[in-house]
Length: 252
Image (cartoon, rainbow, N blue to C red; front, side):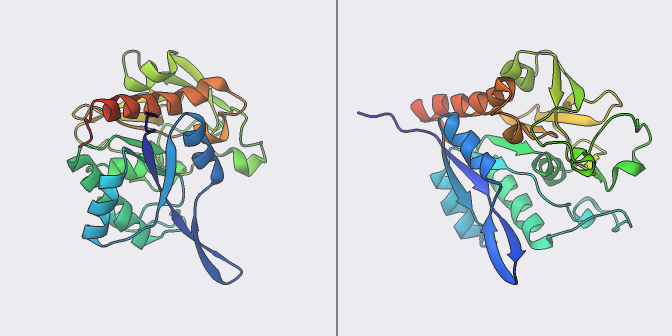
């Protein structure tokens, strides 16, 4: 009998193109999950609780992708002048869906905005723009798209905490990463710890201390994994973990 592969939900985003509304996501997320042995499915931002519960019975894990800014109201702040584009309906869906997923014991993997949403969903906060971060080192490139640096190229180092789940995945303490963000974590959510940081102290990785596997990274491994095998290890680690849970019927 052929073994079933883990099913990974990827939250889709809305986009307006030529006056028409589309739902989708950057294709490399889909490819990365597939290449590591998972079955990717897109989850539309449905707000109905019953729909969310039904979707959660289908998936073995959830990937929360990058995207726009999170509305500051979700961490009790007014919108600053540096805050970027917001989709409040998407924020509401992602936060509620992530919370429900955690209640069911579903493993979670957040990337860039996805890490930030994880942090906000469980009680953390964000700097609405990198300029508000007091220890910013202008010599470090945190938004390489502004400099037209190809997305797969690394632009700064990250120090990984030995013994963390992200270290377990990468088996390496010092990693070079790409970078595409202007927001960043301020206060880390209760029950979470920072396990990776850039040289100027910006949080580049978090994980839950209370759940078997909830992790997030600030960089974009899905943009790098084709050229850098090290970055694929994050997806391999996530899928391997889901596969073991599936084999032993440990779905929440």
